[in-house]
Image (cartoon, rainbow, N blue to C red; front, side, top):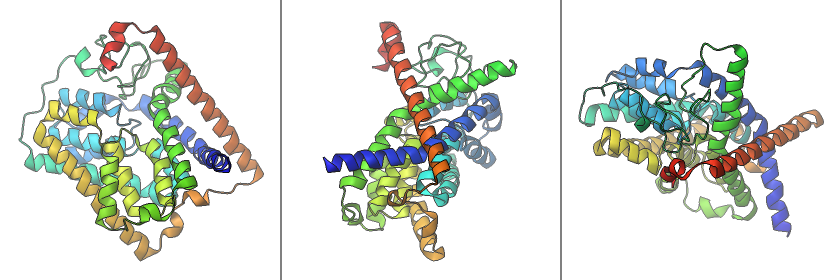
Length: 387
């Protein structure tokens, strides 16, 4: 009973610590979602040049797309003329980081990870794109095609609507919704009231529903690691290549987004794993999953997939080694927050964190109820492809 009480206490502490930063990230993500049109991405990612690879990495890094939502977005970009290298670069940087994950990283892991994660994501994305550029078979950019159901998500309740070119694979809104997780703003010339509504619907709807399950799972796992896992369980692997390979092997098959991977990283740090090994997990986990791999094979070819996986694996391990060296050489340990040192707050600040946690919990409950209602309302023909 005492262990269960401690588990609940650790979970609540982690949830409260991340809540205000996650809400801030959702707000910024929703604003960006309405102001960054897909046409901008397509215009800068069509060539096979090194600059296109770099642009794809930089443009994709802050976008509010998880490993779920990036798939239809990348398909739409590819079929609109994006090159193989630029598409791969976009596929790596976009799910590895984002404005929401940076804010949660600052809250749960400290300022060092909040800075390192986006730069590491951009570097690994450019590295992956260049590998594809030099070693994958060259091809002509895909011929732009009219929007069709093939480029929309199989899980969209309006997949047959041609207007939804790159809807999120987790989208359950109607095709006439003002937002979708692909980043395509459908109301760019509408009044501010409608814009605000679209931002609210995206930030508290599609985006939050994309991350809720894995975020709660991650917090629960982090709390469980704090409660029950001996500190020497993971540290037995040391700080060398074996520890990082294990973290990469754990992270690559997981279907998890950058924000939801952060609480798991907290648990790994609390168990004594090195900062570099944790960074390996934070990069490899969000960047790869079975769905992404299947899309790469179909759209870019098997060699591109092999280069993609090789790039994610080697870049994450190399960057992990670099982070361990930097932390040791420059004494940056104080810039890392572990689960055992969750911030203590004053009364006023504690109230803000508690209120944020309550608000976030209510929003999560709302998304779960909405998804359940949508599931029961949907017809078999609309839901078959998701099973």
